[in-house]
Length: 109
Length: 119
Image (cartoon, rainbow over all chains, first blue to last red; front, side, top):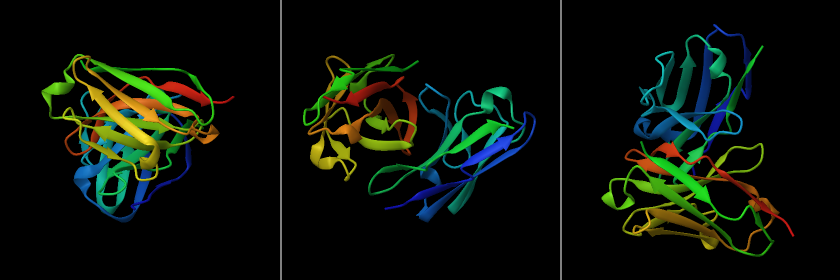
């Protein structure tokens, strides 16, 4: 089973700053099957990035994804007030199917 | 625009079966090309995938829950359903339904429904 680890657990930043979120897999993951989601309190997760680096429809270009193998990164170039949320990485593999990282909370400093 | 909406009891007694339904609008389950999934989130915790189903009825479950989970589809109602048997307090969570597109992307989600297991 592939385990995803996200760091840091919490990222305290100010609006306008750059956020760099890490997702590390316990073994190599196909980039095609690596996605990132944003979740705000009381809401369902929202797809941000798929295929490690492709933005989902309607996602602003301040969000970008990169990486391959076991190391993936979500970058928010300049934080807007609406970007303060929890971010999850997700991969798909043979077993147990979908797995999610524990999340990184981006909060206001 | 595809929309998904979960429905079902918000309170289930221990040892009973949790039953939820997801109604899909804005698209037909039977058109194919997508899988339909259930995911849950324990209070204040991360996301756990439960399983998914294709319109044909083929399913794939998380091995950790497989013995207790059944996902079914009713294409005539454009719905798919989740049954989780022998529930305990550890099954208290927000349950989401979602659409799975090729490359295992969860692109549309329901708003989620909280199910509490308590006597």
